[in-house]
Image (spheres, rainbow, N blue to C red):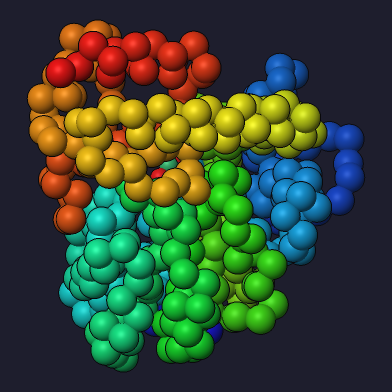
Length: 341
Ligand SMILES: *Cc1c(COP(=O)(O)O)cnc(C)c1O
């Protein structure tokens, strides 16, 4: 994978922080110009977050050296662009309709985004993607389960695309906890060009602490570690995340409730005539097609309920994306839909 890395990144020397230079135990630290008076946050955090990574590795079944943590997945995705895409030269491939950040990051990094639309079932058009790949293609973003459509993308298609070792295949699994399908993290040892992104923002219920997880071969992780801001995960986030991951029971409970509620909404949605289509969901939201999305959106706003009108997205005309709320919130949503004519 090394040859896919941008030349300036290959050549650069990483910042060497005080906390990474001395690795041992000592009683007096006068090496980082920190404030010596103890509070819980007067010291710089562990730049490589080993305590947290050890917990994550155990939960996900990988090695801690195969993990990079970011200030949300968004930072992880940005690091991938910076590591692999030469501005104005290289390009990426995305599969719309999909997560909007890939396009934003492509523009930010001045990298061309070649869009190969998902087919009418929102599945990958594998042969079109393969045709689009050339020597300038560095990253292929596959969001699975996909946002905003909710479906998990076909495994055989992804496997086929992973077979091309001349580019990095990024599988964004922000919603994997809600899917019946297995995570691609278990396939890291099989594919050196595989990068999997997950997050604590959805199923773990911690969008506010900003913790994104990236899983890849140690070769790729080493490159990303070299270019990340040295202290990108603050101590409060590391501590909070560590406690959160210790509480698997709370995670299971919330996840089960979301899945039960998703099934309930899907079922009741079928009784509304104005809902033309309910897309099958493996995520914590449901995409529906209605007669008039803007009209329904306004109706719900009047009831104090905000959903996402996704009509502007490719092949999502009159589609509304609804996040699964608490049981009480969902009941109110259904009541509001009942009064819609
Ligand atoms: C919500 C979401 C994320 C999570 O981003 P964070 O920066 O970790 O909060 C990532 N990818 C997709 C597709 C998402 O929908």
